[in-house]
Length: 291
Image (spheres, rainbow, N blue to C red):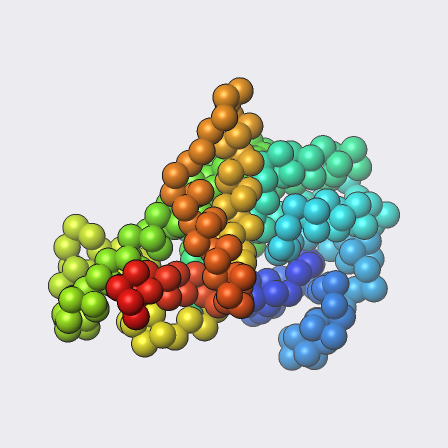
């Protein structure tokens, strides 16, 4: 199966590289051609003239985009190149309703859609160790599963189209709570004068152990907030979670962790930290102790 890749950002670039290493990647496209040219030269993979040309040349298209409207625009731009039984797999984080709309638009051309958001950050994308949560028809999932193994280590079919994004929303809400807990706890420990290397080691072996503590704990203590998952992107994702939650009930609903984290992220964005890693929340937690 020949694969095309659209969207060469922080996650898309390493995923495209892993597909190329597996001998699957046949074409690239990115909104900014200048960003695609170095990767094309390194991999020896051509850049398509537009999304339709890319779709015309491959059996499957993988997408890694930033926002709901970007996904639907790219789907519309692919139309002239769509052909029966081709697969479109979206690894972006968007609303479940957006995924269902993308599926409807593609179905009118005989093409199939899977929403397949991922978790694991830039490190996981580089290492091919992402977790992928997939929504769509079981038969199409089985068709594409072998090639998805080039970019993800744990791939789970979650049900119909949209369920991948619902699962990702669960992940993003949980990630917000973990970020709040870890940054607040470490700021408290540092302010109290603990040896924080020792604290991370001992806590990392107990009931409060978690991926974020292990992979971000020491870097945030060093005030290293180089982006692995940007504040602005998690802010975007939590707004999606908020909209999805509101659609579940006829009464007003507020998810406390989501609302609190949106406020904190907005303050970071307004202070100029939108492109830092979400562990930059540590800045605000330290400020609680006058640091």
